Length: 213
View (spheres, rainbow, N blue to C red):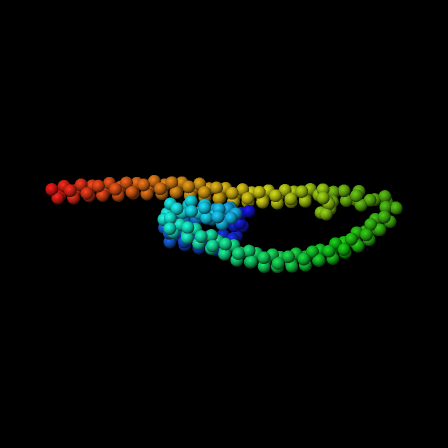
């Protein structure tokens, strides 16, 4: 399961500084690396994916150490974030428990009021034949499973969750695509620089041979 995006805040700042020190484009590769860490399950999968990204910039001796360092820092940030969420959840649970107890008191009072109301209505019905349903035909009881308000609320909730998940996936896919394009562009530029360097050396060599004659 992907890690929550809230885990990324502290880590993302550190990652950007680390990529800057390695002279790697943080805007392109930072989002891609973050997506890999959030999506991949095991440390082995994370390390393989990171090596595939960073091997274009680092030599074989250092790329493994850098990847392990990134994974270690990511794990530590997630642990701190999880501890904070657990503390927040405990506080929320305590508040929810208190609200639930208050709601039970209100419901109990309402049940007593409803019972009193029904007795009064029964007496009135003996004389006027007026039922609660005839007097209030359009009232929707919130506790009823068929209440349209509850169905609409559930529909909006599910729709919002789905939209958030889709936006996160699109963002990760775009970051992966941008990083791949940047990687290919950088590779082509390095090849051009290499050829230009070789050509310059050959010209210098020919010039030195000609001067020596």
